[in-house]
Structure formats: C-alpha cells, structure tokens
Amino acid sequence: MHISKIATIEIPVTNLQRSVYWYTETLQLSLIHHDESSGTAMLSLSSKGEPTLYLVEVEEHTPLSFYNEKTKVTHSVIDFYTRNLHDYHAYLSEQGVEVGSLPIEAGKQGGFGFQDPDGNWLSVCNINPVP
Image 1 (cartoon, helix red, strand yellow):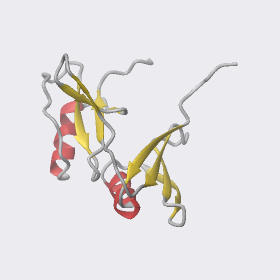
Image 2 (cartoon, helix red, strand yellow):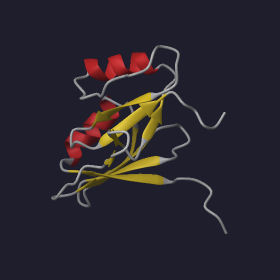
Image 3 (tube, rainbow, N blue to C red):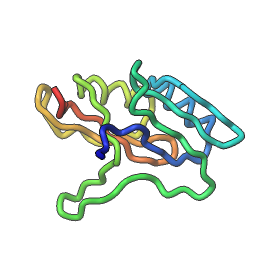
Image 4 (tube, rainbow, N blue to C red):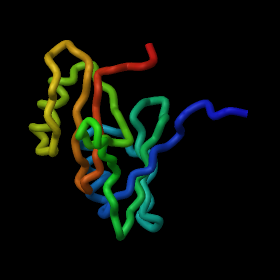
C-alpha cells in the first residue's frame, strides 16, 4: 500500500461566495462543485481535475501559513507553478492581490507569496520538480 497522489487541498474561508469568485476569477480555477448548504466548493487547476482545492466555510478562521524563524520568511502550504514568474507577479498586483516581493531576477528560479481574501498565504514558483 502507498499514497500515489495528492487528491485535494482543503482551504478554510470565511465567505464561500467571495472565495469562489476570487479563486475562479483571479486564479482562473474551474468550479467543479459548489454546495452552499454544506459551505463547501471544489475547484480544479487542470482539465484532469486533480489535485483539487476544497474551500470550506468556517466561522473561526486561522489563516494557512507558517513562519520560518531561520529565514524570516512566511511560507504557504501550497505552491502553484507558472513558467513566467514576473508576469504572474504583475498580473496578481494588477488584480489588487496582496503580493510579496519578487526577490529574483528574470529568468532565475524562485517564487513569491500572495494572500487570498481571507489572508491564507499561497505561493507561486517557477520551479517544476517533475519534468
């Protein structure tokens, strides 16, 4: 027996409608399932439908992130991938998203953090660990 993939990443949100709109419009994810009665929505990053993001509406919210004391960097639990990091940083900034600094030169590998409407830290990088 073994685990073969990540199926779903669950994200706490305080306003499901607002978050569904933000994730579908700003990050351009596809909505697979939306259930107001259970306060949940499932979104997909790809046409394969995996992994999915599962938004769960909560009343008491602790944003997803953790702080590395050694590097003084706040990390996310999710790193998205893009080939063009600088263009994506500019795109998110234009959308009014709170983005972290982009401390690398064009063409170099790295990433940056940004926040969803609930203050959950997400990241995007241009490092593709699987060719």
